[in-house]
Amino acid sequence: MPTRIAFTLVDVFTSQPFGGNQLAVFHNAGRLAPGQMQSLAHEMNFSESTFVIRPARSADPIRVRIFTPRREIPMAGHPTVGTAWVMATRGEVPIGDATLRLGIGDITVTVEGRAKAPRFIWMAHRAAEFGERRSDRARIARALSIRPDDIRSDLPIQAVSTGNPFLFIPLRSIDALARCVSSESALREMFRGAQRMLPVHMFVCGQSLGSGVRARMFAPHTDGIVEDPATGSAAAPLGSYLAAHGAADAALRVRFEVTQGVEMERRSEITVELVRSPHGEPSIRIGGQCAIVAKGEMRI
Image (tube, rainbow, N blue to C red; front, side):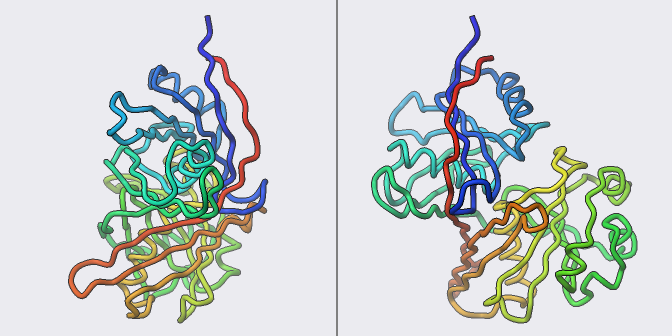
């Protein structure tokens, strides 16, 4: 007999259905094998799908496993925010702080709103880890089908992670961002000889973050994702990157919006908040709204 599994489809980082980033949340998935989860994620073919696993002990955090169409990943932003939103509407997480167990460990989500009616979800991120810098602007520009002078020289091209690493590429203009082309073969060539391939995150920001950041993310070479309309796991390390390189002002609390998905006609808005302490790295969290669009059942 086939296994029946209920799911909810939710658009993440948008207040309107059919915007933002699509997510399939599979409920009560503890009876599924990892191969079955991967098959369901491949069938949905969204950037990610999540699988909610109730703990054996009620005191333990709910486990959330995240799969792209190709592989399981330890964490991601829009799947975590979207899953928390769906669980909040079902009364499975409370208003206020809750703990979810991801592949990287336990993380805190904060639900704003009222019981079974969330209006905003925050996801805390751990401190950023800064990786290698790249200086081969001509090679990177060629892979993206833009000009070398479209890439800013006053900010580094650098890998940064708060759980999922991205290569951040600062661009000079919205026009340059719009001209970027996602090509799996070109991006594979860009990483030829590197220790590992990373998703690439191109962004544009002004002198002040008050006007926000525009971004795009390509990962056909790592996860089969030609372009992602909203990438919360990139927005958080982007905030740390901007703070580390002086692009975010020195205020104790900095909040700005990352707009993504415009070129895909799936506009997304991710709020990023940095809170500085007198000592150590700033804490960082991302947040947004969601819109539930469908509920159903799959058989596997």
